[in-house]
Length: 129
Image 1 (cartoon, rainbow, N blue to C red):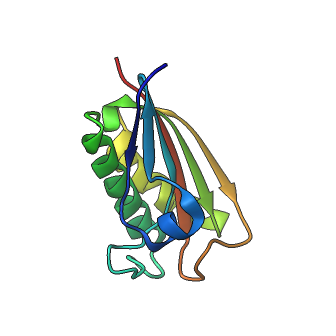
Image 2 (tube, rainbow, N blue to C red):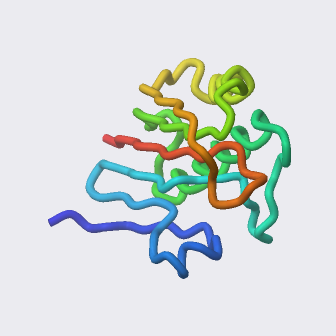
C-alpha cells in the first residue's frame, strides 16, 4: 500500500470538519476545495473574483510544493463560482498560471460558498512521475 502524505494549511475548518488541504497517495495529489481565506481567517480580494482566483491558485501551489510537486503537475481544476457572469475574470486568473499547462477544467455556478464574501472555490488534481 502507498504511503499517504497530508498537508494542512492551518484553516480553522480543517480541524472542525476533519479534512486535509492536500493528500498525496503514490503519484496522485488531490487538493481540497480551496478559497481565498488567508491564515488570519480573512477573505482576500473581497468583491474581486480575479484576485480571489489568483490567491487560491497560489495557495494550492504552496500545498503542491510541500508534496514535492508544482503547478505543472496539475491535470484537472474545478472552479465553483457564485456568479458565472464573472467567468472572464476568473478564467483570466486561471490562464495566468495554466496558460501553457492546460489542465482539463470545469467551471460551474453554485448558489453560495461557506462565507458570503467568497466568490470562487477551486479543487485541483495533480499527477507526479
